[in-house]
Image (cartoon, rainbow, N blue to C red; front, side, top):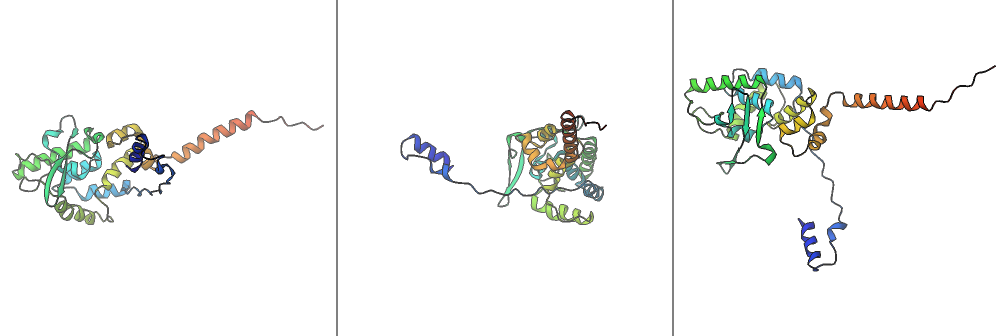
Length: 244
């Protein structure tokens, strides 16, 4: 912002140069991505079986949606036949007041194809809601009275108890989004496809943060380099002089 203001001042001949050009910005270390391993994700999915909100946790890992997006999800956003979610909004809470806003970024808005595992979980969740008497509830994940789930209640009543049952260390719920991306890359899903599903602005952002999750990336690179070096050495090899 300061740089842009100084640029404008230069254009208006208010200052001779943009002093921001001489400033070296400090390096901001990126926080390490916290995600569950394949084994930890399995423990969580086993521990949540039969839970009233089982489908929420399954959908979180399967789609990579943020908690606010899941809490705002309505049945009109879900196509159980095609297995597709439409992310169009996010629930936020400020000073105890719930508000519905657009997703975090424009790229976050869109349709997400779900694996069958998640679609089945949502179908079973729909049946559970009908039995509860919440057939008319618009929200996919509602409280027992059909109203909106609050983030604070969810963390206290569902998330923390689940981690305890699964015998897992403390994880932020957002770690399930990281888990979705990490497991997708480890399974060999193309980076561009993973980036699109995650709603990242560019595939390079996905690579920067999750490149270490690519299976055998280091060994693959070493193998390719070995072939190049071997070919180069062979092409430039001098014949060995014979003796006698």
